[in-house]
Length: 125
Image (cartoon, rainbow, N blue to C red):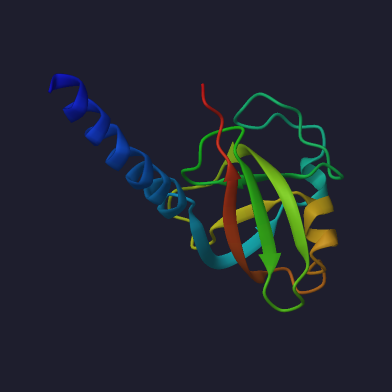
């Protein structure tokens, strides 16, 4: 009888676990900006050196090392960036992209873009 109860619990655990794994994939919408070219060579919050052509970004709350898919809603350009820096908690923007990422999303001239963020990988450490 004991064995049968445990297998029943496991049977229901797996579908519930799968449900929560899809629900927890985070999607945000908001404004994106980008780093000035003068930031090239400076250290980020994570300790990495920022380079203008890197595919990196700053975010308020995502874990360092997270990978995020950013989509420009104006032209459907997509880029995948690594979070390696922090933004001010008072910022009205949801992400601050490297200059190279902003170029690929085609919003250098505009300065800001309406984007969606989808977290695709969070480090386990």
